[in-house]
Structure formats: C-alpha cells, structure tokens
Image (tube, rainbow, N blue to C red; front, side):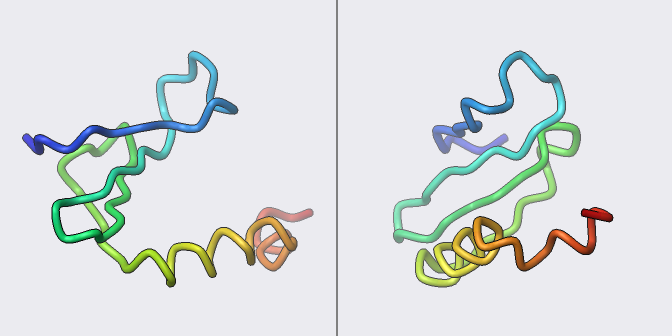
Length: 66
C-alpha cells in the first residue's frame, strides 16, 4: 500500500466511492479510485491542472449525458 497522504474532494461527503488525489516525493500527481486503490494513475501537475480546468469548463459534460 502507498504511503502517500490521499485526499478526497469535500464534495464527496461520506460517499464510499470517490476519486482520491495525492502527490509523490517528485511532485507528480497521483490519482486513484477508492474502489480500486491499487490502480494508480500518475501525471504532471500542469497536465492535471489542464484536466481540472477542462472539467470546470464543461468540456466533458456530453460524456455524462449533460
């Protein structure tokens, strides 16, 4: 198991399944689904920031049927 300090969004509340985010010692962003904690995606902060901006701008709304 990873020694990273994982955080979840405050929007998740007490939900059991949510996305967790952490950083590693080299400054990379690590992302995992709480239902599958051993599967971890790693990316650079700039790429993760671009992804978050796109989500906030609604770039993926059509994928959710919205």
